[in-house]
Image (cartoon, rainbow, N blue to C red; front, side, top):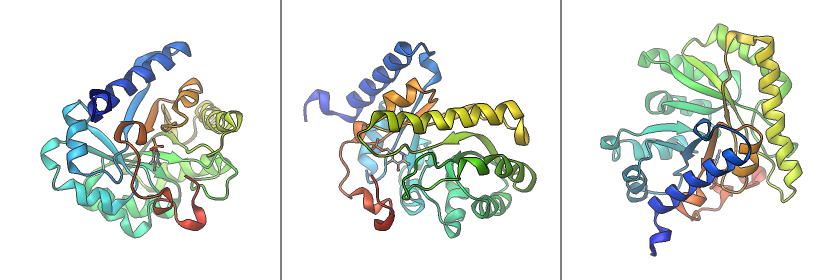
Length: 248
Ligand SMILES: *Cc1c(COP(=O)(O)O)cnc(C)c1O
């Protein structure tokens, strides 16, 4: 492994690239956070990232997050759920995660709220929005967001909605990718203006290893980066997005 190939050097380089893109886009470089995505990577890799200053990590599967939680408890990690979550896995996320970015339906919000009440805690949440026409993407349809926010504010008091999250279309067409990110930002701006559900929606989690530059140009406040920090994954992404839904 060369120096340029360590997790800590890739993290440092990614932080620089994020800042550079933000500055080029006329944005405050401190306004774009990096969320390293550690899915499929084990304890050693995560400890290396922790040593390089990372504290929050995104995981796509509740079981995987749970299996990493105990062995890494000394690191003081804030685990962030970013993947599709089945309602029957809400318990683990309510116990372990510091926030969820893949809140996409009311029955999940209610399951999380029940568990969070039991744990006596609250959790930050981003609402995942489906901004792409791909049949494969999870997420709430944009037009359903206002009513969803009203219901969350009313019915699930332990969830504090802080913003929106999306996955762009997985396609070489940069304009199509940009359109997804723009849809998310414009939706946020509209809902904000209307003051729906009394939430700020200050955060926009959008952008991954392959499209984070476009996402920052379109207003991302947080990019979720796996491959560019930890390297390629052993499992194909169909492991994370079931075969009939596989896109990445
Ligand atoms: C895996 C994953 C990412 C990171 O993807 P990379 O292309 O490896 O950077 C971002 N968001 C979600 C929801 C993911 O599951």
